[in-house]
Length: 120
Image (cartoon, rainbow, N blue to C red; front, side, top):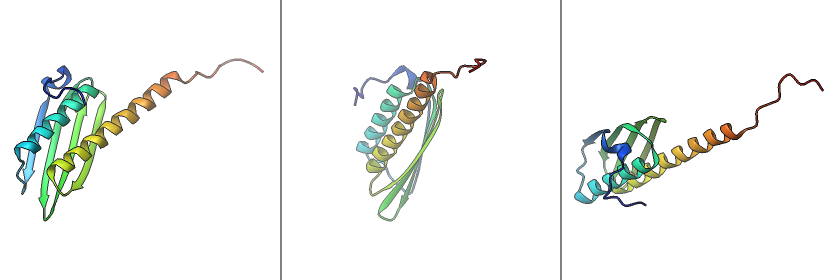
């Protein structure tokens, strides 16, 4: 992972919404949250909004993350034993979605156009 202390420009003006229901985030959890946001900032060109929803349940935490960026909207959900585990899982899922979207975009761009109007 890149240096988490440097906040990329793509995330500096983003709106970050954090909702916690029946769960307390520790300092380490908040630090992991910041690392995730920085990781998103390195991958996305421009992020408009990041919404985190933590829901505490007996012996588990559900996390839903929604990102609205210039390149589209991305959503991931994870249920783990800890908030930090859920954060890491959701971060990996969103980064995987972004890589998949980029691969599809590049593949379409590189596809050779069909020849039109040529008689065989």
